Amino acid sequence: MNFPKNLKYDKEHNWIDEKNGQAIIGMIEPSAKKTKEFIFINLPKKGEKIKKGQTYASLEAVKWAGNIKSPLSGEIIEINMKAYDEPSIINDSPYSAWLVKMKISNEKELKELMNSQEALKHYEKEFK
Image 1 (cartoon, rainbow, N blue to C red):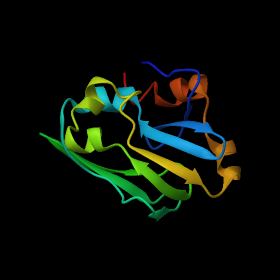
Image 2 (cartoon, rainbow, N blue to C red):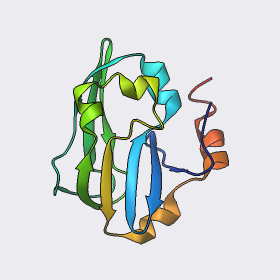
Image 3 (tube, rainbow, N blue to C red):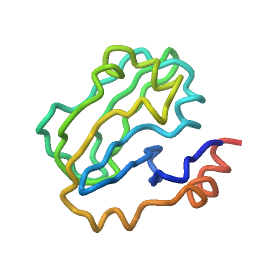
Image 4 (tube, rainbow, N blue to C red):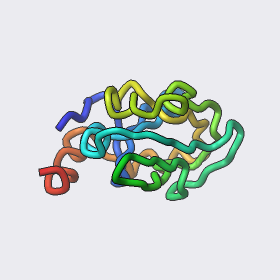
């Protein structure tokens, strides 16, 4: 399992790259690889305000469909149109095929995220 050290993680299968009050958010590699090939994605609109724990994305694969909950509260400032148009890139390169960029509204929530070692330990049992 690959959890890059420069990113943070939550327990909802998200990776987070935070800089200067903004976060780039995507799906962790073990989840993306396990699901095989995404065929549809629904993302929020630019300007939409999302709360931590609220569904911000819906994904569908050939034999799976599910929602992804936001790791942070904030306002969507950009969505990845390439991932929207071609969702299978999430499976191929989950750490470069981000889903949304967000302006963080509650920076205290960053303290609840895991580092790469904590994420590896947390997800070990799920992805054996």
